[in-house]
Length: 275
Image (cartoon, rainbow, N blue to C red; front, side, top):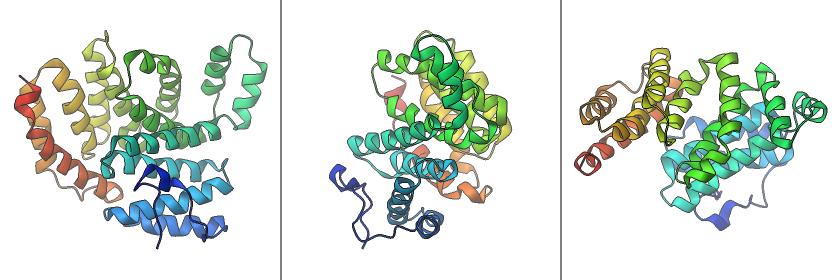
């Protein structure tokens, strides 16, 4: 029996009796991931891929996959705030370690003049386009990790996240069903002092790209419409999610099904959110 590392913070350790064959671990992780609508399989995927990543921490494709699993567990599966936070942090740190080991990053960082922030910004801007997955899942996990932190901490990482997301937008704005525009929509909706029309435009672009990815409507309702006090649009977006066919995008059918569950729950809090 495998323990996922998500039941309690202390169970994050990899079981002792587990393969050291990366290919085998990845294959087993992929099989469990394909059945992630059953949460026990999502947790088993995490265990297999965590071990695989520990053996090959600079494999960008594998690291990005693992970080996606961390994000899925934190966002959809786990309820304990401490466990959710630990998963997002794990995804963010694993991807960051991978990003900062990329040859282009290290070369540009070492040859750029200025302080560490300027050097890092230049190095991130120079990352190759094939690094989009690891960049995206870093932003997704880091953004979630910071979501409930104090504004000052969110602002601390703003420049890094903006640099990466602009890089992703330039390289592949379609990535993960309009993911970079969706990220910016939620990101700017939560930052103080930012014109909400900026967030609205990013959400619109993401939806235009992938109108059947239901998570975008959910984020727009939760962060943009509540902040602007637009109850009618809040209810319209959530009703759209509930009425949609979650099977239209087979690759993210579990995410769409779970978005419908979240939309149903969020609707029950409408009166409280718009008092």
